Length: 101
Image (cartoon, rainbow, N blue to C red; front, top):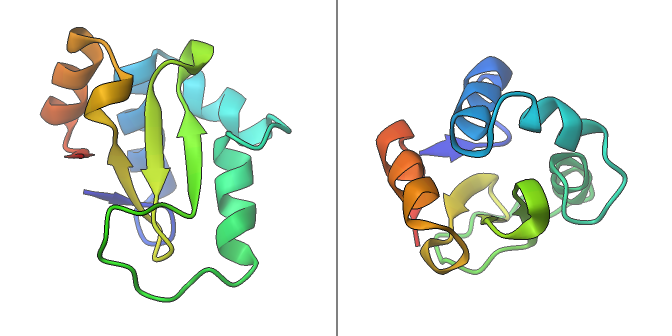
């Protein structure tokens, strides 16, 4: 499982890049869209820190091309949406250790 708040940034980068392709994390960190990693950090910084154990996300990160989706819970936990992915990306997400929802 990965968490935007507590997981080492290099580990996060490697996980996202494994599923999405090399350079995805870096690119998404600097994108100004509402579905980027940058935006997810900003949402968490603005007070959505109450502990949420549900699958409900406070924000979403879109993968390369906008097809794959990662939900981010209010506590920073990141999960991979099984229904917004290709079979190949789903398998990669499982292998690398994303929670699958």
